[in-house]
Length: 357
Image 1 (cartoon, rainbow, N blue to C red):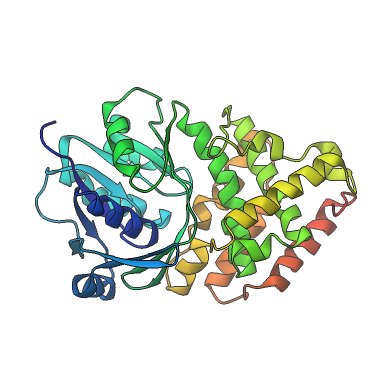
Image 2 (spheres, helix red, strand yellow; image 1 turned 180 degrees about the vertical axis):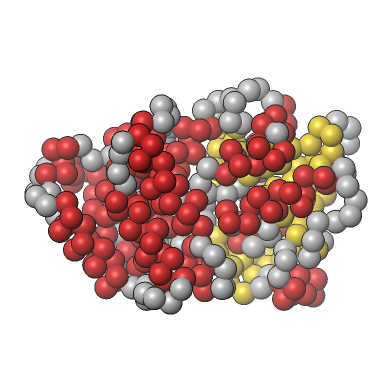
């Protein structure tokens, strides 16, 4: 590679907007793609506007309705779409890569496997996002929580391009490198299934929801199902952001039956802390539904529910969340605390004699 790298951000919404703006602010050559004409018009007129720490900043970033025609000219294509659009985005952009370029996945779920099948495992980099953002209006993005990234390849191979994209992303937050991307992805999947799934059903921000003990219990049970499937798939789970241990969070058989225990108290306390740290985080699936787009639940809770039977397991809570999120998208259910209560009550009936700890 010669010269400074060029970055194309495909899916310049909430996460992609922060990424594109932050890279541009460091002097990187960046362009963005967003298929929403209103978004493109707004950014071209007013620049990308990022809200962070009570401040608003305006950043000039070239934005297009489709991938620019200059094929083979980008060092990194960063996919920041929602998971339902990621494969189409990869197909549209893979030709834009230089021969030694890389596609970078920023989706929740297990999207690297899908992109590697399209672009090649050696050209695919996974980037786990440990912070949140939401789109306030076209061209205006609110970064709702701090954090950084975990970066690596599915095969764990050393790759100077991994370090190169990591150095660029340090403009946004701290970067960790992993040789066990699969383990890091599954740990984040467990967290996303709980946070995004319950956030969609509950229709509120994370901090408000996790103040309720029954919501924290649902989160623990959802994550426990994910951990069980990950273990069956021989995944060695990694700590989220180096601190959040999903192996420890998963409920033991005794904790499932107990009305209370020191272990349960500690796990509830941890979730309260998570809720406080990410209190402004809002489910991206709920935002997608509100914009008339398909939610990513099939790539999160649905992924777990689909894989569980292959190992003789069941993931009934994740399967129910998947169905109910689709019901919300089809206007058959309304998000809210009452819906979360209904999920909790149904779970108690189905799992008796387990207690409501």
